[in-house]
Amino acid sequence: MSDDTTATAASENGVPDAHVLRRLEDGVLWITLNRPEAGNAITAAMRDQVVVWLEEASADLAVRAVVLTGAGEKGFCTGADLRSSGPAPSRPEGAPERAVGDAARLIRTGWQRLVSAVLDCEKPVIAAVNATAAGGGMHLALACDLVLAAEEAKFIEVFIRRGIAPDAGGAYLLARLIGPQKAKELFFFGDDVPAIDAERLGLVNKVVPREQLMDEVAIWAARLAAAPTKAITVAKYLTNRALESDRTTALWDEAVGQELVTGTEDCREGLTAFAERRPPVFRGW
Image 1 (cartoon, rainbow, N blue to C red):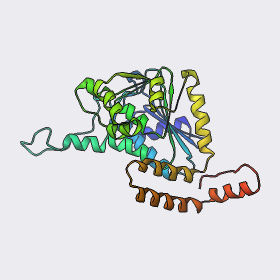
Image 2: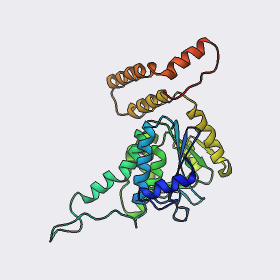
Image 3: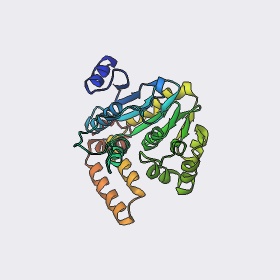
Image 4: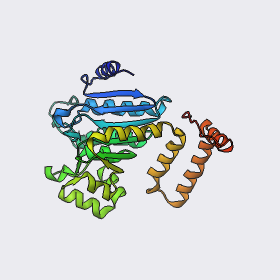
């Protein structure tokens, strides 16, 4: 899809042209948050558009891998644009502007839905963290399957600085990645975590100089796009489920997943290529 078509598609879905970009190239879907002047803070319309694209990617056989990144050098994503909100629902006369349940519903249908779209996407998702990932933006990165970061990038659990509790699935994600004690330290103090420290903690797979980031991400994405996509889908599902399943459930899921994968053309190709002593050519189904 060309950049021109990308901008038009975004506009048709209620997102101003160029605020979020979509490009499909060689099996890799590149999604770019493009509000560098605002640290790539996400508006409600941008959030909903990214969710749609991730959901579509699951079913699109042309998509073999997804890269999520931000434009510019200021921010990968600095969370929600607090000035952006959807239209308020109509209220009967005398009703309060904010009723019990409104805020929780906003969280569930907003950032939780975005983070879940990354976790549930059937294709591997790489976060290319070019700069600061703060608040919901940090959790958006951590929801991705692989995280590559520029040396200049920072990760910030900024919620405590605003007097609010973490959202966007943060406690769920962070406790599983680094354990509850370290997660509490990041939540309680809200300190900047430089990329190199994030790598040491296990939040980031690899840190590279900023000028090399996209080249390195492209290499990783190309490898994923050439891999047996359905096998990766099952591996992603099993791994995401592992920490919340008992042994019986985990082993059952594994057995069912293996049965599904062994019925794919890519599995047959892998076995045939092994027998013929040649590199396999996987097609994604």
